[in-house]
Length: 190
Image 1 (cartoon, rainbow, N blue to C red):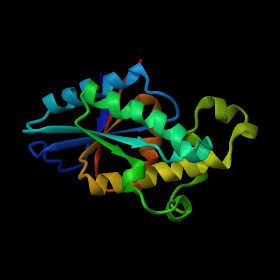
Image 2 (tube, rainbow, N blue to C red; image 1 turned 120 degrees about the horizontal axis):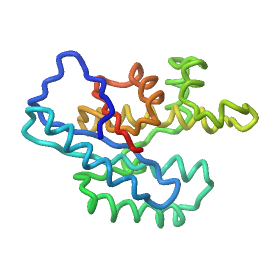
Image 3 (tube, rainbow, N blue to C red; image 1 turned 90 degrees about the horizontal axis):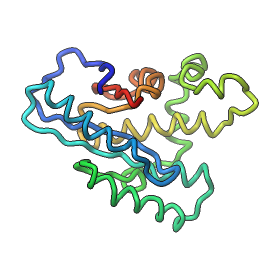
């Protein structure tokens, strides 16, 4: 299930594992989410850690901005995540709207100078690379926003690692240089 991982030098596998998983509420939750608690258990078994916490980082801010939803529309979708994720085995659910206070532009501009265009290009899906006409500024700002959210979540919730789908590989490789030290576990979702 874990395709591969990037481990921090000197990582102490006996300390408590606090693994984050980031999802945004573009639509109602999908079945693929059930894979991540199982993947977290696989990571846990490969360590000498005494405990595991799987923390869902649910972005309910960016979808509301990008998709121009009302608060009520967003709340209807977010409540589905609040109900389903604990049932699947997530220990903690943290909605971005509850722990982010800075504006999108303050966050994004501070990170934008640290990412090259070639790095950003690598994390785009092939469909976006085929035609630049479909690439929007919202996608660039969305990437920067997500890095900022992860930076805050890693620090605030003392996360030691992140679970990510293998299709998000380039995002997490690019963002590692911008984030506090953490492990990344890539889950094969195929």
